[in-house]
Amino acid sequence: MNRLSTFLVFAFAFLAPALALAAPAGAPTTTSAAGGIVAIAMGLGVGLAAMGCGLGQGRAAAAALEGICRNPNSADKVNTPMILALAFIESLTIFALVIAFLLLGKVA
Image (tube, rainbow, N blue to C red; front, side, top):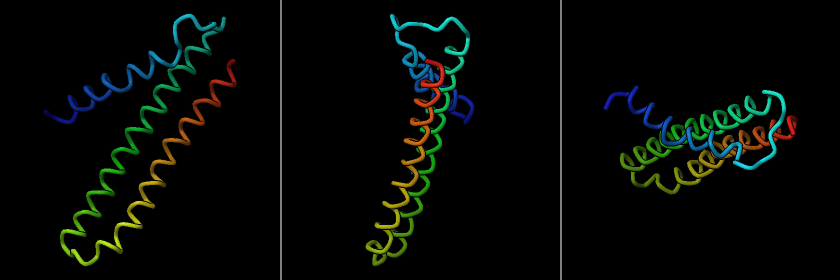
């Protein structure tokens, strides 16, 4: 599978449900188009943040494991900075989620 088809599968599997869940059925709708635009922005923003953070975490873990495999004695020195880096990367996804909720509050 090439990169484009992989991205399309990812977009369909993860971004489409995020867009569908951004505005649940039966919720009061706004009279302007701003509510729909914010819902799309929320879904895309959080989805792209999760994708980017997932790629970053994968690269960080791969580099750490490669370093440990090359020098097994360095496992204690590599684990703590790797876990700290993974926590910082994950905080970016949480930050995107907070921004999405702030956008939702501006419209409602």
